[in-house]
Image (cartoon, rainbow, N blue to C red; front, side, top):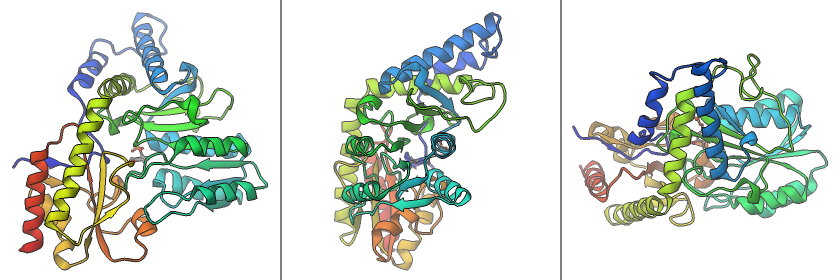
Length: 376
Ligand SMILES: Cc1ncc(COP(=O)(O)O)c(C=O)c1O
């Protein structure tokens, strides 16, 4: 059976060019980067070249780029560091964050008896920036603002420069989860006034298990892991060498292809929405069609016994889509993000998320299958 993969916000297929760049580090170039002889020097060099390349793409200095095991570790390190090392005593976030942020914020707040301010969510899934400003104004403590750049479930995008300016105005530490936007948009940490930023390689045709943590040079936080002091003491443990090489190669490739790929993927998203509306007139859009992640289309089907079976029935046909976020792919419970915007309405949310590997023909096939499930 030919499968159709419309779940690229969960993870993406590795690009063959990325795999090619990684391969030598699985085989002949296997040295431990901490070793002082030639095997180690060549792999250390590969990591430092990857760091320079990543830094260049996000407008950072190489010394501000740290490689981790993924988005979850980066956000955990950033949030815990802001509280433990930078003295943040009040945390502003939103109910729309990925659990890597939300649960970390809730755990550290509970442990240290800190208050959390949740920025109001507008009906279209965007955040109410006036409310963010009020929260910042009311805060009497050193504040951490942690808000995601692109929402993995409904695709809304944070006006990150505005938020960066607000944080700057009120002297707050700003962390952003850019897992869904890095390599999908040009990002320049200098112009967004962000202190900490998280990314993950597997969301842009790179390998799994490798992430980025950007830490602005003016702040100093400590590592979650103690050990050999790799990554200049920010991330002990022998480096994920091939992962790091793959991360940098995938980012490089994505930025080279950005104009072409982003326009193409947005056209697939537009077409899917057009065809869905024709096929299922009662369908609703969660989030926005334009000015949101071009990779993500989240819709709500009226809750009927047939619609409830959609994910399962489409899976039987080889169509891979998600009902919620990646970690709950396949689960039929309504996610915390949809709950935040759906206003109690009873819908079956489905997320279609696209990559450069998808085609319009695949959209046509999926639409026909959806019609068949709902009509049968
Ligand atoms: C927005 C967002 N943040 C964080 C994560 C976690 O990243 P990782 O799986 O690399 O730990 C994900 C992945 O699902 C995500 O989409």
